[in-house]
Image (cartoon, rainbow, N blue to C red; front, side, top):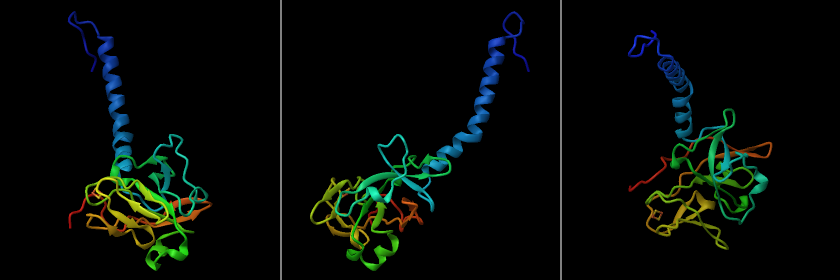
Length: 192
Ligand code: FES
């Protein structure tokens, strides 16, 4: 239907606006919601990882991780669509490397060549576990100082958090760190 202005003439601006609106709505229906959903979904098998400050979206490689060095905080990314799963902060993952000989068997089974991944979100109050206690090789939440042992399924060593950090199994494909499954438990704040 063509719109007309107050004089009864066809309104070119109105019709152009209508076409733009229809085109925009169609594009949003095709890509917008799908992009939003994909970005908010939890990590999936096959996802790669990108450091949160890396605008170039370079997949993290195992050689970047050194045993005894602090954790890296990263977003999972679908390698096919290059969609970062940054639609939920609960998707943030911490990655680090530990000597395999120092890991428990459960932890070793989720690791790849010493590389480990855990949820970066502390289940006590939802803060990001960004502190690293060098020498002890222990992860620490900066909010209330809960401490976690990355060699033993992020077991709680100290502090008020009720649970370890959920683990994310990984593998290495052509040097790139890749998710090998889903989180071992629900991520985010948990008081039980
Ligand atoms: S939020 Fe991590 S210890 Fe409280």
